[in-house]
Image (cartoon, rainbow, N blue to C red; front, side, top):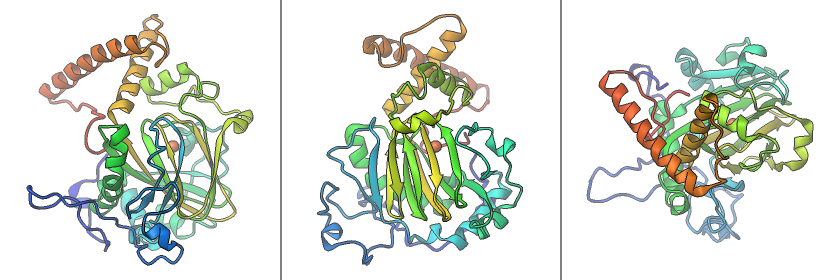
Amino acid sequence: MRLPVRQRPAILRVTHVPFKAKSPRRRRRPVCVCTAAGDPARTRRQRQGRGAGMNRHAGCIDMDWAAFDPWRVQAVRHRLMEHPLLQPDQLVEFGRRLERAAQLYSFSNDATAGANFSEVGRTNPNRKSAQETLQDIGHAKAWMLLRHVQGDPAYRGLVDSVLDEIKPQVEHKDPGMCYRAGWIFVSSPRTVTPFHIDRNHGILLQIRGSKTVYVWDPDDITVVSDRARDWFHGHRELALVKWQEEFRARAHVFHLQPGMGVYMPLTSPHMVETSDEPSTTLSLSYNTDASRRNVLLHVVRDRMRGLGIGLPPVGRRPRFDAWLHAAAHAADGTRRYVRHRLGRPAHFDGAPYASDD
Ligand SMILES: [Fe+2]
């Protein structure tokens, strides 16, 4: 849910340079918003974009784009740690505003990896306010998510600046970037983010503190079955996504420090454990043509199973998937058109920015 316009105070001073040029004839190159131009931690080779295996242009994100595969988990580096919008005092103020707009999700750090991520806010509630939690996250024993930060103009600028920067490289292999969203996780020491999957490609960027991220391949049906994926996309809930300790041995494990991150394709199962210090993480998510296609195929499979019709797993028979997607895409377009004509809201995962979900 986007914040109402009247609840969007322009409180923050950022070093962001607007991406969109005013002149329609000339489009500016994306400008990095990170404040690390003089970061002594960066070597001269890095500042010149000559880090081994990394991209060749200065920016917020370093990633091995030659090896980039939109359906493969991959390490990322970034330079957003000192960004003004991600500093603790700004996050306290932003959290207070999001609390009024019901855009927070929080739980106590007694939750375990096996908790249902969609339900844990109710089963393991954090009873402190946003201000209490964020001001003293070191002792709050809580996990707090600032949701859909792109609803705020300043934070939307941050989301856009980073995604605009990487969009050319992403779309070279995975066209159709849309449905952009930003999320900020603030966690107390020794807090677990329960095992779950998401509906978008995502990039986790560690801002402060350290954490261990366990990520499984997006097609690892040992840890999340085909049926659980169908159910997740069709019902938008995690009832069939179940944690087992043995899964750790199959995971890609990332020990994230500030400046490090990880790219996770759509529906990559993941679970996160913070260390003995508080943690702040920025997550950026988006859809592409291929991710939307994948979601729609899972939704159709789920619907067909409900009618007693079994279909082959997504990806098993490409020609059948292509036919099924064409039919489902046409039906989905018709459904949204009818709802639009009736004046009813229609969820559209191809919109420029994510709506509430
Ligand atoms: Fe997630």
